[in-house]
Length: 340
Image (tube, rainbow, N blue to C red):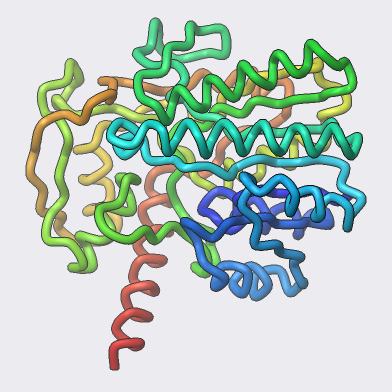
């Protein structure tokens, strides 16, 4: 089966591509390289020992996207592409609405034109907003709090309406909680410029001395230690869930929603303490004001994913901390080597 992966050079996308290739899927990556680089394709090839088809395509360019479909017999699409920084979306809402919504619409139009109807959408737990109950299951009320989350929720609504218009569509909406960790080979991971949005990446950049200290956003939440609680899921576990969906998509309802998380929450301070225990590195931090749109506690009820997909997150926080630290040390060494 040929599977198109949009944003396949990104953090979640690249890990998913590795899992797909190792499961003998034929993968075609499209990525604008706005938030990634061609180094990733080299690393994917090194891990899998297979050539990967890649197109440098912005999904806003519908004509070029149509060309990609004309060159392949694509049977399913996994859609990761999009801007993803919640805090940035508050200050640049039009950037997020334009890119994330139009790219999804263009993709769906081209899929219909080519009679491709199997669609897996990388959504987010941010669609829930402030949780009405915990843990969060798929029936919980959705009310995104920032433009990023709203683009995910709007995209879900677009896909729901699309499914109603044509029964051929088979759509899986995967709501990711907090992806962290890296591939065990240490070749692909998350390495953003500047201040990371991902807590574990932020901690690691402090651990290697790239950043002086960690800013903990909010110390007065109604949690045991006052810091926010999140459901951290290893990105490899998350990637593997997409294989389960592909295997079962023709046997699922026309539209299915799945929460993808471990089903337990850790506070920021708990993550810091675990990281220090695993690595032996002290992490200096300061507690600063809350960020707009952040909620106190958010973690998943993954029972539906466990039951219907036969999928369960296996990697724990200790393993997440160990993997990310090894990855960041490798990145830090590469930067130092390039300076010499």
